[in-house]
Structures are given as C-alpha cells and as structure tokens.
Image (cartoon, rainbow over all chains, first blue to last red; front, top):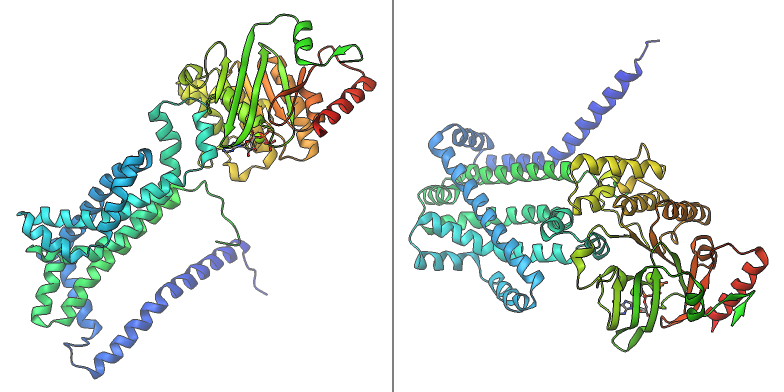
Length: 269
Length: 262
Ligand SMILES: Nc1ncnc2c1ncn2[C@@H]1O[C@H](COP(=O)(O)OP(=O)(O)OP(=O)(O)O)[C@@H](O)[C@H]1O
Ligand SMILES: [Mg+2]
C-alpha cells in the first residue's frame, strides 16, 4: 500500500476543484466556438470565417500599435464617459435626495432622457458641437447619466435609517457623517452601478464613434463593414468584449476586497 | 397615595428627594403624530446622577420621549431641556455629552468591533491612539478581549449589544440614554448585562435614563422608577434608593401592575 501524504491530498483536491471550475467557465464558449467552426466549413469566409483567421486578426490588433491604440482610445472613451456621468450623477443624486424641489424637477427630466435613443444623441451632438472627442464624451454622459443618478438616489434612499440615526446621535460634522455613514453604505451599490453601466457604455461607445472619429473600435467596425470583412468585424468586437470583461474583473476584485465584512450565507453562496 | 410609607405620586416623590441639579427637564411637552397623541402634557425632572427607569407598555411613547431627549426629534409643544439647553436646537452643543444604547445594537456592519466603539470618539475629534486605547479599555471591560477585530456578523447578539454599550461608555458622556437595550436577548444574558450596566453607570457617576417595559428590569436598574400611562403621562414616580425589602417589592409590583393594566 502506498503512503499518501494528507497535505498533498488536500492540495490535489484544490487543484481538481480549480480545474473543474475552469472547465465549466470555458464550456459554453468552447461550444459556441465549435458550432462556429463547424459553420465555417460549410459557408463562405465572408459569412463565417474560420476562427483561426479571427484569432490571427485578434493577435494582429493586439500587437500592432496603430490598431491597438484604437482599442485604447475606445477604452478611454468608455471610462471617461462613465467617470463624467458618475460625477454628475452623484451630484444630481445627492441634490435629488436632499431637496424635494430637485426631485420634482430633475427626476422627470432624467426619466425623459432615458427614453432618448443613443443614436439621437449622436445626431444632436453632431449638430451642436464640433470637436469629435467632446461629441463622444457628451453622448456617453447623456446616455449613462440617468441610470447613474437613479442608482445613486436609490442607494441613498436605501441607507439604513436606524444606523443613520445612530451615527447622527453622536453629532457628527457633515463631512464625518458622509465618510462614516453615507459613503460606506452606498459603496456596494455604486460598484454594482458601475458594472451595469459599463456594459451599457461599451455598447453605446461604438455608436458614439460614428460622429466622425478617425479611430476607435466603432470606426474600425465601420471599415470592416465596408470591406465585408467578417473576421475583422469579429476581431474588433472581441476587443471590446475583452475590455469589458477585464474591467468587470477589476471591479469584482475591488468588491471582494472592500466588502469582506459581509456575512457569507453558506446556503446562498 | 402612599405605599409602605413611600410616596408614590410624582410631586410627592420629587419633594421628598434631596435637591439635585436638574439634568433633564420636560415642561408641558406634547408630541403628536397626525391624530395620534404619543406624549401628552408631560412634566418630568431628572436630576444629575440619577439612574431612572422609564417603565410603560408598548406604544406608550417611551421611544418618542427618548428621541426628544436625544434631540433626534423636536417636541410638538412645550419644552425639553437637557443641561439647560435644547437638544434639538442646540444639537451640536451636545457632541460628546450624551450617548445612546439603542434597542437593537446598531453596529456598522463594515466596521470591526473596535472600530465601532471608536465611532463616537471619531465624531468628538479624538486622535487615533487615544481612540484605540479607550475603545480597547471598554471592550475589555465588557469581556470582549480577543474579539476586537471581529466584524459584527461574526458576533452573537449578546456580544453585539456589549459592543454597543462599550461604544456609549467610551465617549465618557455625562448622560446615557438606553432604549430597551437588552429586550432582544435571552433572560440570563439580559439580567447579567443589566446588572453590569447598572454598576458601570454608578461606578462612573453618570446620569442614565433607561427605558424598559419589564418591571423586573426596572427594579434591577432604577434608583427611581417612572411609570408611564398611554399616551406618555406620569402615572407613578417611585424612589427606590435605600433599597426595599421583598414584601415591599411585591406590593410595589402589584401597584405598577394595576397602573399599567388600566
Ligand atoms: N415617526 C412616527 N410617526 C408616526 N407615529 C409614530 C412615530 N413614532 C412613534 N409613533 C407612534 O407613537 C406611539 C408611541 O410610539 P413609541 O415608539 O414612542 O412607543 P414605545 O413606548 O417606545 O413603544 P415600545 O415599547 O413598543 O418600543 C405609537 O403609537 C407609535 O405608533
Ligand atoms: Mg420603543
């Protein structure tokens, strides 16, 4: 009989568990990829290009600075738009939360804005403004501002009244009340709001880039359409998806670190 | 009306008690919520250094009185004064001068036990090292050494309430307000904690108002028991200093029972 080191057994179990997780993470994508690859065998490349070609194009984009800078430009536009919308949304949200009149005036306006399609903002931006970057920033902000504002208001209104009263009873200054009570209690919802809005913004940005920009994923996609280059269109789309996934991951890591205090329910995890 | 030679009505009780500096004063205080009268024309003086148990049935306006003392709520009419000032209008003046133990522990879930205890001290503007030292002192005193870095979700209900008592005592405030702080705990824990609490209050020479709806708890804690009717009006005002024997205790208990059941 062989001697089995129990510690080794535990770590082997862990490796096995990690492998199992990785397998299930990859499984749906592998399935899609297989289906696509099968389709590429029966259809012409401009409909279903081989994934090997697509992979080649992805590598090409990642390693050619002139192309990769397009990806970076789009990423910066997404983050810039989100940051701008967040700052404005936080200000609007605090105002709405604190002043009834602001609630009455701003809330319906923002609900109305929410109904305006991204493409309409593109048209307005082209008519109103000159600079390409400014137009894009404007579109990004207008499309994500209402959601951010409502999320901030929701987080503030959802603040635990008992806890707020308890903190209040120590007579904090405004600043201390904000840092000890308001900020920590709204932070989880703010991070969730960022995650949700990141998805929206990444879809809007490619539309916004149609305002005449000469770079960026939206611009590149338009080129591929004109060339009927499906492999290129896919490769550029994937860049955007990668970026969203990467940023979501960063936010999740932040969440894990910042919200360690939360109880984990064994059943609901 | 007297019982075993002890005066029972508010005015009698007040007149036989030695003069003390008044810490809390209610003058003709009424508070209504819509049509509901929660507190009606209340007059009550609480002296410096007194440990008063406010006893009354649920919904009789105890928490409402309490919120007016702490300045979280303004009186509808009449006047509430604490240390000669209005806790509602002079809100910031009371920083560091009163501390509250709430019905539920109300710990900030994102702070560890010791950081929760430091909260009041932060608001008072104390430096980091002094805050930590005071917080640890009180956590130790309440038997929580070794748990200072635990988050509230990892503590039991009794431990959490101890943290919230530490949080109140750490501020070294002159006035302590407690709104049924132990009612959510089991009988044993509740009894132990209220005895600890009462001796801490006496030891540290605080003024304390302790709300409860349990007659036993009022007996255990109060030097003075104020029994409230619904809406909050004084029904009985009992001086318990000097101790009462078992028989007298039973008679007082019966009187309180009768008063509360009308
Ligand atoms: N903010 C409020 N708005 C409306 N009604 C209120 C409010 N606060 C208290 N009340 C009402 O006033 C009455 C007294 O309430 P209060 O909370 O002071 O009672 P209590 O004596 O503390 O009761 P309990 O022992 O159950 O805690 C109750 O009928 C309650 O419904
Ligand atoms: Mg109450």
